Length: 324
Image (tube, rainbow, N blue to C red):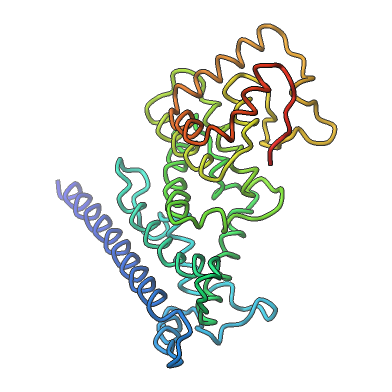
């Protein structure tokens, strides 16, 4: 009995300790967001000293941090906290196995709000806003860190690599999708994803996410459907070529790695020969995809002008211009 009591007490202590870590991390992120929002712009009174001091306390280095040429600024305290909150909240004590994922969502949302002023102000030159070097450096270090994590060969932080057929994969999908969606909600995700044609670049990742949802087929479990919905929602936010989505829904074969068009040496969809059985299977997969994730039909309806040409080409059996 004494051993059982000690185990119960130990479990409670660990749970309380984790909650305290999450609460502290969220509070720091909220303070950082407030500091960046209010002190991050260059003003006539040459303000910003308070922000520099705050960032130095967090180990970020402030405006005196090393530039990208000099190095040394890639492990800032606040930048690291932001990356962990978005992609690895369990490292901060968050419960990633529970039902509601409150800890995960709080951390991801708070981290995204820290980055929002730096990204949105820099991307809107019409606002004529100049940011302090400390904010520019925070943006650079956080982006470099996110790129490095997304490019890891293990695929640990790649939402497109999750295995929706295993319990571990479903947990990873729920954890990662919270961070991805938090960045997407503030229109930051498109900007922090790597550029180019890599698997985690915006255009390839978007297609891989939709393929992940389609792979569930008919009759997924509730947990699989929820995870797949998260993947498809993020993928639709990132954007896919209309003809790719139409092919996915109507049963045309598409490359399994998300590349589109089919690439050098690959068969174009119009010249891809399948057996009658394969055609029936692919069409059933497309129907199941549309049934499982109505958000696809909603997106097509509200942006019908983007999909009309691809639909007409598909119905008439002609090849349209591939989208980008």
